[in-house]
Amino acid sequence: MATDRLENIVALAKRRGFVYPSSEIYGGLRASWDYGPLGVELKNNVKRQWWKSMVMGREDVVGLDSCVILSKEVWEASGHIATFSDPLTECTACHKRYRADHLMEAYEAKHKKPATSLSEINCPACGNKGQFTEPKQFSGMLKTYLGPVEDESGLAYLRPETAQGIFINFDQVMTTSRKKPPFGIGQIGKSFRNEITPGNFIFRTREFEQMEMEFFVVPGSDEEWHQYWIDTRMAWYVDLGINPDRLRLFDHPKEKLSHYSKRTADIEYKFE
Image (cartoon, rainbow, N blue to C red; front, top):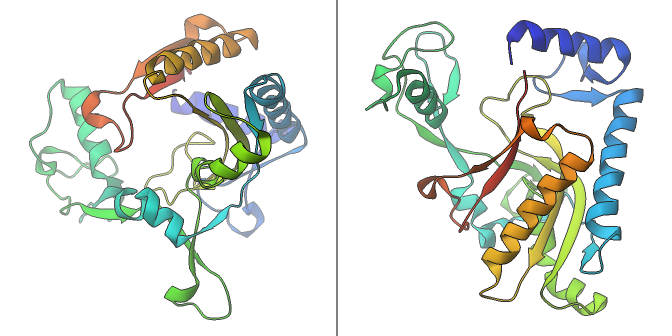
């Protein structure tokens, strides 16, 4: 989306009471937005429609509301503490920091060939070439401490996704709901990620709300169910009134899948 058009949208959203820059009277906080009177109603309408479609309207899906703060043992078991990180690099000329993989991807998209190293890439901020430091892994987890002493004994994490709350309650939900696969667990809630480079406006923020459903299946039926949910979700967006010509399905390349994923597909919307 063009910068001037995005600026116009931000100005309109603020003027009409959809969103406001958070902490604005004290200088603001980057990539943080508060939803105003119209914005919160719009957001709640979307959440209600999603919940009605994904949970209340189905016999094979139940709801959950899990905690935002989870113990570090949860994230150790899931692999997040070891793997939920991004390569951080800094331009030594202007001291702007970037995700190294994003720089490499942008270079390849522009030049139609991959860069052999960061030394070939100009800094997006100052234009200097070959000024990036060697990438270091930067954790995307936001830490907090519980109790009166800030030490390892009280270390906990704000969840970077809502899925883990579903997984750790799977057995109890299955038992109390008298369900067995195939069935799903859905929830809506806040998640937090310590993004290196937050995006423009509300598109990529450190605090965000997710509507997530995890569907558990009988082994061997995963591909069939995955395709079913892709088709079902695409139809839901169209039923809301979104022009299908502005939607597309993007399958992640095999080499870029998360460590736990067999297939990942995104439904993307074309902004102009």
